[in-house]
Length: 87
Image (cartoon, rainbow, N blue to C red; front, top):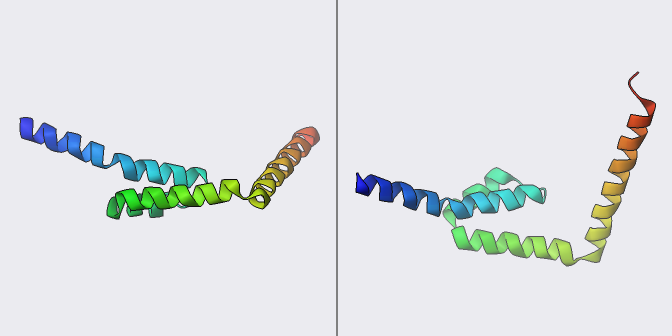
């Protein structure tokens, strides 16, 4: 029984990186399942590659301005829809 418990704990520990990689990818608009699969195949490489992609996106001022503009337009559209009410 101890062996089965150890296998279960190792499986949970090993699946931490793919789940984390998929979650981070999903939060930044990338495919969860693609990055989850990459996390299983290449755990550390996929995590560092995703981190580099996210940093590149966050450090580029043009991309940040574009993301901010999208948020502003989405909020304006929601406010307009709320002001008009149900039809």
